[in-house]
Amino acid sequence: MRVLSAASEIYPLIKTGGLADVVGALPRALAAEGVAVCTLVPGYPAVMEALGSSTVAHTLPNLFGAPARVLAGSGGGLDLFVIDAPHLFGRPGNPYIGPDRTDWPDNAFRFAALSRVAAEIGLGAVDAFRPDIVHGHDWQAGLVPAYLHYSGQPRPATVITVHNMAFQGQFPPDVFAGLGLPPTAFSIEGLEYYGMVGYLKAGLQLADRITSVSPTYATEIMTPEGGMGLEGLLRGRSGVLCGILNGIDEAIWNPAADPMIPVPFDLQSLNRRAANTRALQERLALHPDPRALVFAVISRLSWQKGIDLLLDAIPRLLESGAQLALLGTGDAMLEPALETAARAHPGRVACVIGQDEALAHLMQAGAAALLVASRFEPCGLSQLCALRYGAVPVVARTGGLADTVIDANEMAMTAGVATGIQFPPGSKEMLDAAIRRTAAIFEDNEAWLKMQANGMRTDVSWRRPAKRYAQLYRDLLNQRRLEQAA
Image (cartoon, rainbow, N blue to C red):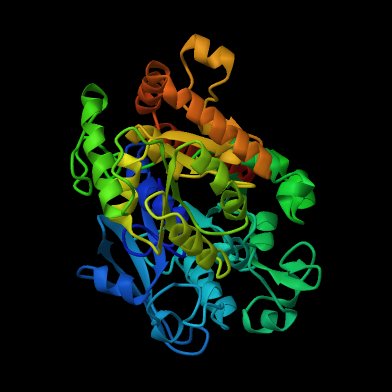
């Protein structure tokens, strides 16, 4: 079985968040299930630089304003199609926003290009790779099902995965005329969404199958609170919607063989973890206290992630005797507020604004707990890494966080199965209570070690999710064959 994956980012070539990790790891896991995946990505400068020897697989005389090529090659150990279109993607830095921290004004056409090229490959533009399924990720590939649906040609099956419903790719109606779709596509059955052009809406409307990145999130997005305006559409298509939990790449996130941490360790040598705590405190100028409860926050800095709640909870965290280490980038108002908090509490609060993969690994290996205060969270990957590294996750009870962490309630602690602490989302008071509860359990060394061990034994790999995706693909193709034979 051949699958063309279409996505706007892919680890290790280009990454702004968890989407890249998923898109980069899933093809390797699917290979074990007999699924060959080739991933189509835009030719940003970082991608073009990482692309090995390549061949021209397809040419486009005019891709939204200028000629373009599709290059076939590999990068980061992955089979790739890369859109070589400098007029659209030849811009360094963040793939979505410019130096002024606002969206590139032509994003509608940049990511329509991604979808259009995916559709052309799906329809046979590259003889050497004719996919059975085209799988688009998030709004940036939301028009893939639309271009295929309105082509009027025999087409491959389509899947769209929602990684975050908050980002929907909505554009003014005058964009539609330049997309190269028939006028009938601008309707409630197609791209039209309250007078706007909705990229994610189109994908959800027209894809053969819809997945989200956790079972709980699949339920949440069918509610007004989680669906963000698209809940009615999703309820209407609930028969083709399912949630498949994300995993992490265990080769990259492996505390026993991680080149990014000073002292590797595993469950049998958990005492060695203390050396990473010392290294983390030294790296971030935190007080060198081996008994400190160090909370790590590795996150996009946004309202969704509850970073404003975290700011309000810092006094409670410090009252408990804990330290806070934070890494992330995002909201222009939250960043300086966090830096101010760090300056106000030297040695107790540390804040690094930016993205630093090596520091993220050190924080997972050295912090006692990982704090995730999200108001909503489709899946989350940092808590999966925390489980693997013995950093006890303290998470809001929402989306994939609820699906992946077993709360240390009385029954779970008695049964010896707890892996972390959950708390209701969206409330400073509940976050304060979770910090107090975490500090209390931390004082019980035996209970804490048991939670660490439970977490480190948890299967957070892509093995089970890959089996579910492979089965979804098989079921979809079998259904289409039956429909075509009828």
